[in-house]
Length: 144
Image (cartoon, rainbow, N blue to C red; front, side, top):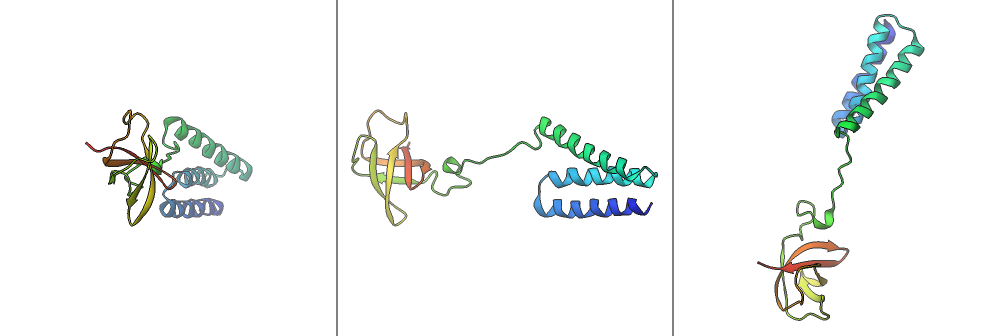
């Protein structure tokens, strides 16, 4: 019975950690601790508690991965306006140095600009919208 409270204490610590990190992984661990605590409360042996806790965590992890809840969410910052403040801004290109590259004055300094693939057959002077960044190169498309 006393071991059950240890399991429930571990569950509480995992839940606190879950609130602090915002992942589902510690929630899964907390559920495993809760299952082990329930087994300890009814008097099941310690090795069985540990084994069932581990199995519960593995099964829950596999189930949540299969349903897509634990799917890795990568954000490509180079083309996401929510992450990169340059996306959607306009620049004026007066002269293209090559058919697809130019130097532009943007945010107080010179930047390399490159015409986005498929944007136009030939680059012409005018206003362009930044669609991506690649390092310190701005990838631009003609402004509408």
